[in-house]
Figure 1: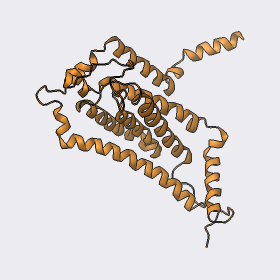
Figure 2: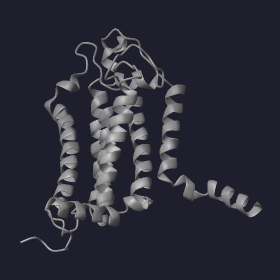
Figure 3: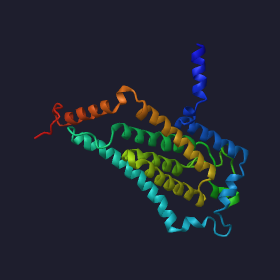
Figure 4: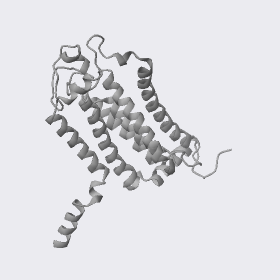
Length: 266
């Protein structure tokens, strides 16, 4: 028992624990919360950098910035189509290996639904009630400024906390898993830059506070880390690529009205 206790203490204090993506994501949530609960004035100050009392938020009129938001939406939709298409190709050609690892498909689709979908857009944006910056009195509206984590009735739906675009942008970074291993580090850098541009674009438009964006990143990163652990790193036997591949193969042959033979039909 003494040795086991020593082992646990060593593990909890080890660099390995700090390097764990789940732990890092939890720490990010706590750090962002601490900063903005302690210094709530950061939010209106940062938003004010993009605000002109005479014209509002001028950057929301620039075609390049409005196009950037559309490009982010398009990127998410394109990846979803790619993932679903890969599974349909596998089912249509059951004698061939899936073009994308089934575990990666399930990981990305489930994390998109749970992270940007349920956690961000359903749980927070629809129920937390934080008015968007351009709806507050400081930036041309009539609603009061609401601090981070304060539930409010000042916004009834599709509210500011947290940012859905920032959440989806971080999900795009996770999509680098679809690329060959050697390409992933550079791809993640490019996608991180893209995610930052997409996210801060919403601040420049007066649609989100800085804390909305940072918390959207942190919460989505936590969902991604947990889902990666459960589906990719340490999946149960029935979620292993071998089982998923076999199931898709069997399903594809059943749709063809044949038993699995490993050979294409005539």
